[in-house]
Amino acid sequence: MRPLLIYDGDCNFCVRWIKRWRLITGEDVDYAPYQEVGAHYPQIPEESFLASVQLVEEGQRVAGGAEAVFRVLACAPNRKWLLWLYRRVPGVKWVTESFYSLVAGNRILFSRLTLLFWGNNLDPPRHRITHGFFQSLLGLTYLVAFVSYWVQVDGLIGSQGILPAADFLNVIHERVGSERYALLPTLAWFSAEDTALHLMCAAGTLFSLFIFCGLFRVLSLTACWVLYLSLVTVGRDFLSFQWDTLLLEAGFLGIFSASLCLYSRFRNPVEPSGGMVALYRWLVFRLTFAAGIVKLSSGDGTWRKLLALNYHYETQPIPHWVSWYAHQLPEWFQRFCVAQVFIIELALPLLIFGPRRCRYLAFWGIVGFQVILIATGNYTFFNWLTIFLCLFVVDDSFWPQRIRNFFTPEAATHPSRTPLRWPRLISIPIIAIIVLISVMAVPRTFRKQIDWPPLFIQIRRAVAPFHLVSSYGLFAVMTTQRPEIIVEGSMNGVTWKPYEFKYKPGDLSLRPRWVAPHQPRLDWQMWFAALGSVRQNPWFINFCARLLQGSKPVLDLLADNPFGERAPRFVRATVYDYRFTDFEIRKRTGQWWQRDKPRVYLPPISLRDLQPGGSG
Image (cartoon, rainbow, N blue to C red; front, side, top):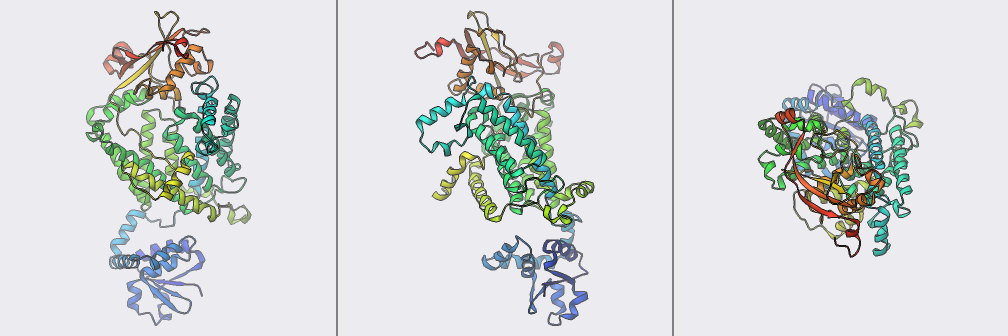
């Protein structure tokens, strides 16, 4: 005898939820209204049928209320833990039975709430289509990241670059023992020469295309993750951004949510486990909520007084021409937008774990915010990857019926083509570790310190170099001025010629360019360097040394070389405070920027000054 759940067929609330439970339990449980079968169970009074659902199991055992619900759901895969909580955890039985009685006594109210928060569709959420789209888009993100870095790798970490990877690893090899491989996980230990770096970028590009096309997805996702981690490890200053670690974290989850089949047919994606879906949503929550919390916990007055956007558009690392127009908006509107930022980053993430309509509201709010960020600034692939991750906030019912029909499961007609998921023996420990480390990272968002057990700390330290979990939160403190470094060279120490960068502000008349999702990493680092001093940015001295040497890979990172085939004898750097012009000034002068008098950032230096014993 299969369990039989008997419910009130005249109750719309009951009918809606019974339909959902049918889909969850499949053929393992029978359902019937008491109006049809109640007479067959004289031992159950009619008052009991009206008060709650009644579950009849083998041996005529009867259970009602919350216990009946949990016993029914325990018949479904991966839901037995609910019944375990009900039976074993003190207080759960009392709370759930009390809540059940509250709902049963107010069915009309809760029926309306169900319609409000879930709509007419109470089907259990599925994520096959969403997961299929996400994995292809994750491959596209990897592709952008690898290609973007590939065209810069020689000038950044190549043998003639600013921070040569081979030199860095040689120093580590001399100073650190065998644990260096765990502290700095990278394939560059085999070789960090230019050819090896290009091969890593090329292989990453190839495997990214495989992911996008559904070829060897687990192998390709693993390869991309290992290759990108290898580049991040040796990239140092140039690959230390939050979007790089976000890509690694999302990519790692992608490995263990992917199908184990060698070829994943686009029309037949694998249904990810509930645990993996929860991890994706948890990542979106941490990413968004932390961005709001850090703005408040930093104590920055521009955020608290709603003045941040008065400065943001012109002081962000690499603005584009739309940023100029956004900066001209009236102050009342800027303040209003800052208030909306706090609502989006602090309130909407709380809805990610709610009912379907709440999740959809969070999805549209967060995605809309990311679209605005894309439209007003150059933030590489960061906003796009955030949007792709937000797909897990919704489910397959989000997609139009035509798309859902296109993704009809082939397993219905071809059982052998059912996508294979990772065994729970592997996925559950992975989920547990990520949950543990991410929970340990939460107090740091609030600038709190917790004394965790030594075992937890050891686990966090062991996995930290692999960037499985990271802390997020951009623009905790809003920069209110824009210091901009202008690098100049000279052959005689008298006449100086500026080096123009491809994307960062320099020439006052050049329109700010739109460059995302590509990230010109030298231009980005110049923004950070301007906020500090030369001593705080030792890589800048290396950059100037390469200019004095006439390093072609480094010069290729710039817009032009004012000295042609020859290298300058001297290099210096000055700092100006840049500001956007307004409509009147731009109409009169044609300039997008205006700047104040310069101050010294780096006095004139020559190669001789950089030699041991030199005057510098």
